[in-house]
Amino acid sequence: MKGVDLSVQLGPVTFANPIFTASGTWGYGLDFVDLVDPAALGAVVTKTLTAVPRRGNPQPRVRELRHGLLNSIGLENVGLQAFLREKLPALRERGVRTILSLAARESGEFATMVAELTRHEGWQGVELNLSCPNVAEGGLDFGRDPFRIREIVDSVRQVLPADRALLVKLTPNVTSIADLAVAAQDAGAHAISCINTVVGLEVDLETRRPVFPRAFAGYSGPAILPIALAKVWEVARAVDLPIVGIGGISSVEDVLRFLVVGAGAVQVGTALFARPTLAHDLVKELEESLITRGCASPMQMRCEELGRS
Ligand SMILES: Cc1cc2nc3c(=O)[nH]c(=O)nc-3n(C[C@H](O)[C@H](O)[C@H](O)COP(=O)(O)O)c2cc1C
Image 1 (cartoon, rainbow, N blue to C red):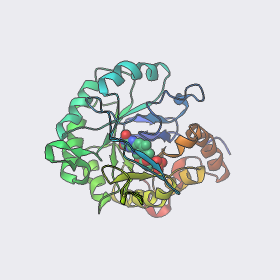
Image 2 (cartoon, rainbow, N blue to C red):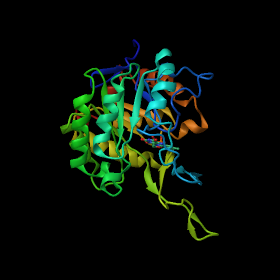
Image 3 (spheres, protein in one colour):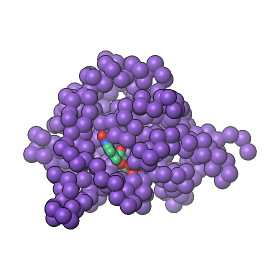
């Protein structure tokens, strides 16, 4: 059998392969250049950027558990301007396909940030991280309200250049993730990133209190794989957009599982902390696995029941 075509199309942008890094788990894509070439990945998704730098939440912020990781980082980041000045030029020079993860304090700020981005080259798309509190609305997540999602996606599409991709990252911590995906599709999103962390809590038996100052934290890693697969399946049945599957990936079989339930690409997250080169290995292993299974493209792994997207 001839080689496999690993390329994946998200809206107007073609990525050479469907293995991306997940936001917040591989820095800004430049930390491991002595080990691996970030340009060999389908794309790097940056740590979520905000309009102004954020210091994040007080310690403790991370707890490793038996089957996963709890984190309450609180969107610590260098801020959009510093990223554009100090990181983007290096990513661009290296030919890294870069997707900027963005978060905002209120709905209108997403479009303002994207408008600022249009003055810079060297990025292929944005991923809206909608799982953050909306300050203007008393701390409610934008990402749980289909109306707000529609409004935000619509406003971003109006300023996004025609040759850039718009990904919308959804939280699994809702009753119907499908309703949120439909709202994003209706407003013009190019792809759905699915899922962000699952809400969790760890207890300190000595103090008899939650470990994290804010009590709740985000759970990730192998334990959430079946949850993520269920959410991707649910979204795949509801929309015609490409889905970027995220959650608990640690092997090529996990990548294949996401392809079966309807993902066109995947992001590797928590597993990168233990093995920063894993995403690179998965590109190679995915190609070999698809050849072994007689598939000419990742799409051919998709469960027949879902039809073609
Ligand atoms: C330490 C840590 C920081 C994260 N930071 C972000 C972030 O800034 N923005 C975001 O959209 N997701 C963030 N995530 C969520 C991941 O991108 C991913 O959606 C989630 O961890 C599930 O994938 P995984 O199980 O492969 O890690 C973070 C996850 C971890 C573990």
